[in-house]
Length: 103
Image 1 (cartoon, rainbow, N blue to C red):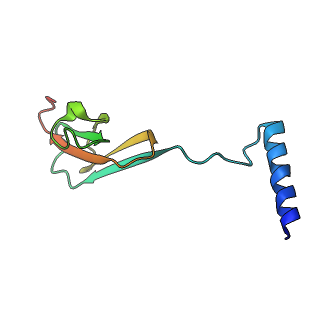
Image 2 (image 1 turned 90 degrees about the horizontal axis):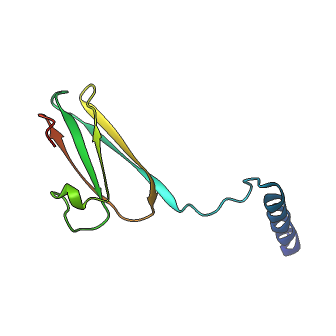
């Protein structure tokens, strides 16, 4: 394929995408998902608390400084949480088993 064919193909895709709203050309990924799976939880009493940090301040102990935080149920010795629609960046995760579920 020569340069002329490549340019024509790009122009056709752009035209189709712009004209029909089709997803033939996708924008670069601007967000992502972090999935945290915790295994080996000793019992199903209480809940798992997970904090996601996007800065070092407060990590790992100060959950109030977390970018996002979730509480997960425990099932069969494991828990899983998802943080969706995150800006692309570096993150750190802290978690603990809150057996008496008092936060």
